[in-house]
Length: 406
Image (cartoon, rainbow, N blue to C red; front, side):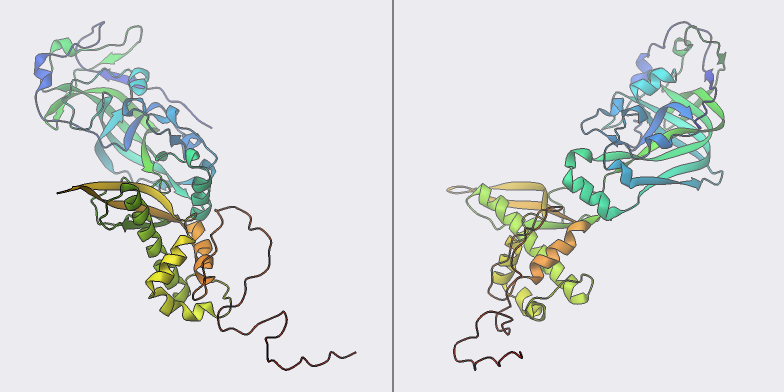
């Protein structure tokens, strides 16, 4: 059961009826920026589990982010949580406070010089002794990846992945100088006022709300592992994920931009063929062999034409997460080179292996079915080249078949 606890407002200065008016001195001094993943809650309580796994809609302004913005989708059911003890460690951290949280918790607008990338939301300090954390994890990565592949609109880039509980206080910034005009008292509330100021990060801070019993006061956003990382097109580093595999495809330089884009993804799919082929040979992936095709895999993987043919059968299984095109000036105009970040969910690896294993030497690969699609009924695959026939009329020159017993 959720239990809301009273909050004591401890605010700096003398009794005043108006919000602070920033002075000129507040615009100077070191910059202060909270990590983009840490946020103050808009209401403290003892059980925020309802919000674990809720997604933050893409495009939400940082100043609007709090737990109330979380959106539960059909893929949220794969995100579960466990409680982890905090060990009573003391922390002093910067948090983002949304406009809604600032109003709800009666935090005045900070007089801080915000760092690069900071939004118009408050940057606050939280000094606390941690009690415990509510930490999320993905129960079945394959099912989660399949859900996000099937319904990308149900899997925005970030979700609420962790809540922090403890005892402590929230401090709001006054800038580099704190004068009497910075006093603040919410009208109509019975509050205690204390002249409590601290200096840290080159700024002065006034103590605001104090929570003397353990409550969940903050949360952390987790990046969605199925939506892909914030990949820099110039990066040579291949992103890592627990729910799939990434590949970076690069095109040759050419005169056509569209062809450069296609070639970059083709290059990525070729890498998938090589990767899946190695998985088959090592036994990491088990597939059914048709006509001894698996025995020929080592030589096939060394054949550029075979790999390109196999790659064409993976078009529906390899996702294009991002493509960047470099425009290269030439004496007679421009040429183009593309780089693509491709992704294969864990749930599609078996299907990709089936495509690769089913390509006999010299044969065209059958296109892979889209994830979750039903394969139409039809005759079983024919034997690989050189394999003994398993049915039909005997080849010319063969001895007549033995009579069947009556």
